[in-house]
Length: 218
Image (cartoon, rainbow, N blue to C red; front, side):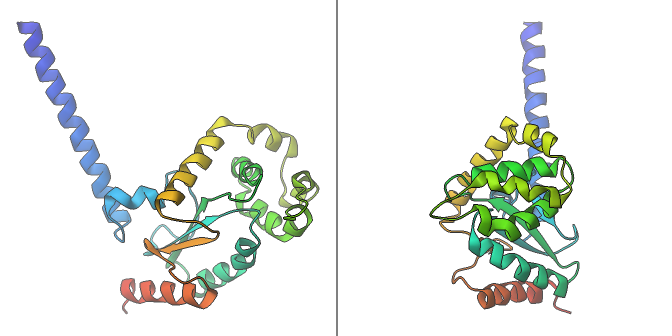
């Protein structure tokens, strides 16, 4: 009887501790991502997601991208220009939606490059060299390797790291989130959780500016 009582008390204590930790986590998520309900925040931003910009930024630009996507490459300079125009106010979060055949291969390279602290350099090289290896009619993914030294990468280590099974899990999770958010094409943009309803550079700029005005009224 005494053992049952101890077991019962312990179980209740563990349950309360779990509930307390869960509430604290959601509270922190709400404070950090006030633009979204705590329950949906992680659908937009995962702990592993690559981001660029200040942690104090109040406007989050979430982009579901594909390294082999021509439109993603063409929008990259535009996104950088917007971020530079509003320093410290916008945080870019990249998510993966590798819809092109074989695009998983390039995501694996990016994630491996992250381990060397060369994520953004590698993405820049990918976008600029994209016409050489991402042809829709005749894709040649192996050609990317002749351009990767431009990012200052250790290629031997990169080749090992890109086979990490954790990367497959990241891709699967991002694709699941993309499906949940009804992302069907890349790039798929969300600003503070609001989808870009009509695709276009001016439309994206207008959506970002509306969130900037709402969060930085002065």
